[in-house]
Amino acid sequence: MNYRHAYHAGNFADVHKHVFLLALLQYLQKKPTPLCMVDSHAGCGFYDLGGREAQTSLEFKRGIGALLKTSPEHPWLQQYLATVQQWRQEQQHPEGYPGSPVFCQRMRRAQDRHILMELQPEEAATLKRWARAMPCCQVHQRDAWEGLHALLPPAEHRGLVLIDPPYESEQDSLAALVQHLETLLTRWPQGVYLLWLPIKDLRDLQHLQHRLERKSWPAAVKEILLAQLCLYTPDNTLGLNGSALLLINPPWQFAEQAERCQQELWQLLSPNAQGMVLLQPLLKSSANPAAIAPAQAPSSRQQQHRKTRY
Image (cartoon, rainbow, N blue to C red; front, side, top):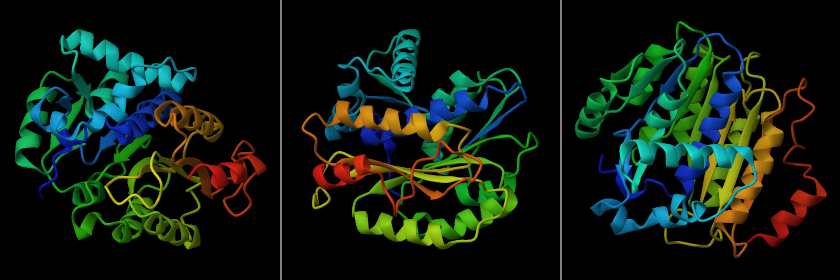
């Protein structure tokens, strides 16, 4: 595997993912009972945006670099920026960027546990050195899917699973994702899952969406949301057009705030109104009246967004 996240750290997809990660943990921690945070593709933990890799791609300039120049109104965006800036100050590293392990550790309470998996030897070694000073943090150098199948459900029976594959192998493909989810949700259907998905060809994501909608999931799976943030038009062939997040069993009233946050994030990162933003329920909880309208029956505002944002 040739993927190195250092080239992509702090880009708009990282911002999208980490904003939602922090928000989910904040919601889950409203209850005092312990949580287990599982990160399946953890990387090395933190990155240098002044380093060779980040300076080669410069992707962070359209992500964290752009957002730091704004003054967001939504509390999720404010929390995200405050976390990045506080970590930079503590590390005395103004060009550093925290990865998901750092974000989770900063949210971890004394009763919570943190499990990290990373297959690449060099990345895993860096992660293990960082984790030595972190309480209740376990690092496994192992295949993510094998590790998830072995470690779920956690002993706490509450928690969040972050799945963020590089999508370089057949095992990590969008086509294989449904099969992985079937296995994981059979083992732990009550868990909260956050899966990152790349948007390169929108048709691939739509095909995955249709497969997920047609599936019969365990009864304990209450709600599935698909959040899409695109900064480029769908005919762009230069690379990543957008970021999608699949949320399984999001907390009560999460969807309404997620839609507002994502809308503002799109406006801040795409001042020329390219691309689009959309939040769709693939499985809607009958007990959650705050969930947004189904994808096949969008609101008039969503219809207008679809027509004007490409």
